[in-house]
Image (cartoon, rainbow, N blue to C red; front, side, top):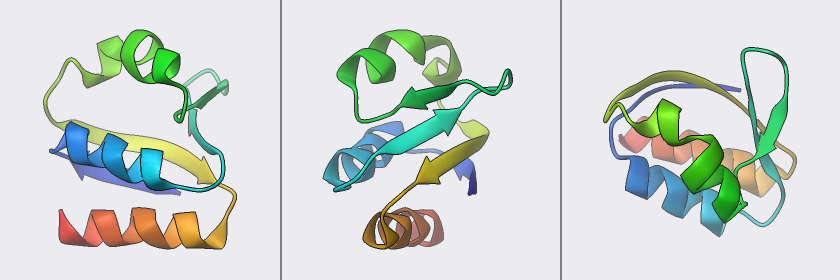
Length: 77
């Protein structure tokens, strides 16, 4: 799923952390980073999240409930 215009990065990570299953970010090179990992959140993605407004990310969520949480986040923000 592609997510766009993330303005509240803290709330975005709150939703990610609330997910039950694995949620991955697909990089431009095709690598997959586990967004539930604090290391990925704070070190590997630092350059992406340095901009307070994220234009677009590709995410993979494996649990249907997690997909619903992410879709609800995108609709509310």
